[in-house]
Image 1 (cartoon, rainbow, N blue to C red):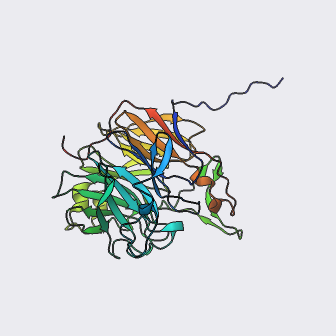
Image 2: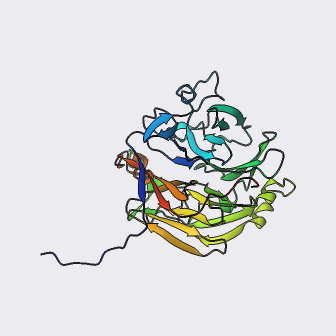
Image 3: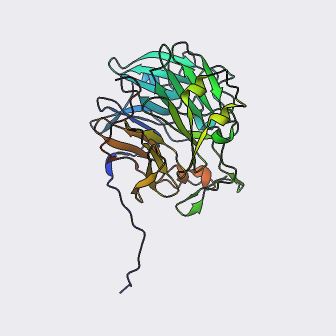
Amino acid sequence: MKPFLPSEKYFGELELVHSFYGAMPTGVTVSETGRIFVCFPKWGDDVKFTVGEIVENTLQPYPDVQTNVENYEDITMTFISVQSVVADGRGTLWVLDTAAPNFSEPIKGGAKLVAVDLETNTIRKVYTFSEDVVLATTYLNDVRFDFRVGKAGYAYITDSSSKGPGAIIVVDLSTGHAFRRLNGANSTSPDPYFLPKVEGRILMNRNKDGSTSRFTLASDSLAISPDGKTVYFAPLTSRHLFSISTEALRDKTIPDTDLPYHVEYWGEKGASDGMITDAKGTVYAGDYENNSIRKIWPDGTMETIAHDPRILWPDTFSIGPDRYLYVIVNQLHRQARFHYGKDLREKPYSLLRMKIDELPASTYTL
């Protein structure tokens, strides 16, 4: 008989919402009416459609098949490789198209932010970017909104480049004018001293030819306060949390050399991919090194609310009107590029949820 030995304790009540047996998902969002949308960037899997909706436990292309077939003659009206989807709580699904399949240089004119009307399921508006905003190295990652400022509100987008400067891209939704902020700043750049460890092993780029290099990705995690006055952000390869006032981000009279002085440092939160805020201003963040989900109160105190072996790389978060926290779990760290060309992911990938009894942060004045 084998002796009993103490083992790690797991906690947090997680429910399975959906299992994915096809392409690997990254983004999830739950609309104000409870509709669930997911996206699948083209990272090498056989992606049938890059944006989908879960309808009665079945994945369907959204808004339709045609929009999910890239058309270079109509590149702004079709999706190429979508990294993030965000329902804004007032009838619109926002689709962030990297136009960078397999982390390539963004296809010229293809990187865009698309507003889809959830009532008609049709594209209402498309925002494209100039070459001084979406650089040759840019990888558009996550987006947050505030409709209380300007004529039509503002969007804030992270550039999580692995080869160039990280940044937060600010978009005036009334004019479409966009500009980069904190471009190459320490707060939007990979932590040069950070060595990620996942499932007990060091995470590195490990190529088929046997060569290796450090895994580095810039600003990725993004959340906005319920009043729209603060954005929280973090590089993917870092354990540090930062914030800055949205007013400072929008104020172009503050030069980028001075803008870092407006950044507030919150300390270590763990290494996260996705991040979200609830209606009370609490930030929820994954910890992909420790199979965990954390919450950070407005005063900076922190608590781990879930620690579970099934949380194999918590990616995007969303809070639904049902007061559940939704999270995509996609085993990103098991991809072939980290294991000398051998894909170690095991299907299915998962959409999980846990009850938090809080509503999502509003993007507009109630």
